[in-house]
Length: 86
Image (cartoon, rainbow, N blue to C red; front, side):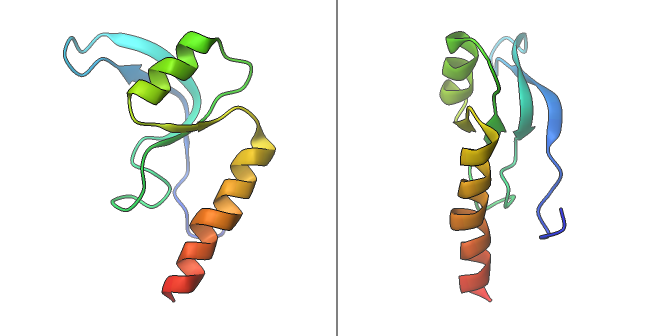
């Protein structure tokens, strides 16, 4: 947030777009992306089952299974892109 990025949603409920039924809970998610309107949905999944990872992937989320890889993504992809745009 200090870098101007939106706050993630803890325990984001992923819902089937057709049935509107809950599918899984994502530990931490940015359903509109870290740059709303410019990036895909992102999630951090810690110690989750393969089914949760597959559901996130099918819903178009870029997901990370550890905090360090998520931080690297934010620094190298998101913040670097913001700096280049300035």
